[in-house]
Image 1 (cartoon, rainbow, N blue to C red):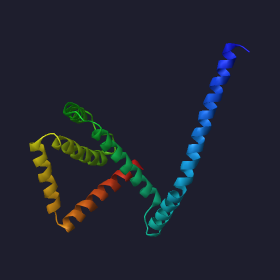
Image 2: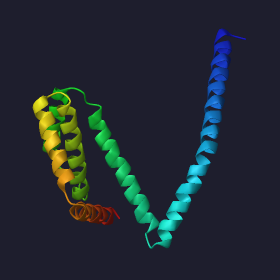
Image 3: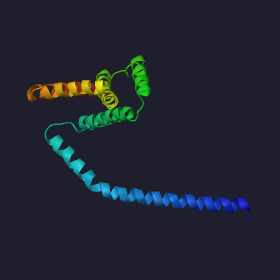
Image 4: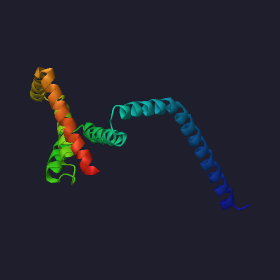
Length: 163
């Protein structure tokens, strides 16, 4: 057997060993996730029984996860210069067509994350962030609920545009 054949056999066997280990981990994870999958299915069935479209619910859940991912991108930026560059670039790029409401929502969330990041670095920014937080705390529960319903309406409108 040539050195090439011996090397090829060694690498094939090693790769297959890694693939088997990976599959075992995936099977273990799948078995650990099974109860949660069942609970999610039950929650969706209950929502459907209350008249909520499961398709719309799934779309909303997916949108919210994407928004969290967008906010998470900003959290990774530690440097003020990078945060400022992100703000500048974001302002120069148009919103994704058809999702203007979602773009605005994501921008609000990202701007909140930017404010929090800056507040950690500057006493003046910390005071501004606290003032914003205090203003939100001052909202009456009814007003807070109204604003929340308006945001849900905007998100639903965004979902309809996507469909």
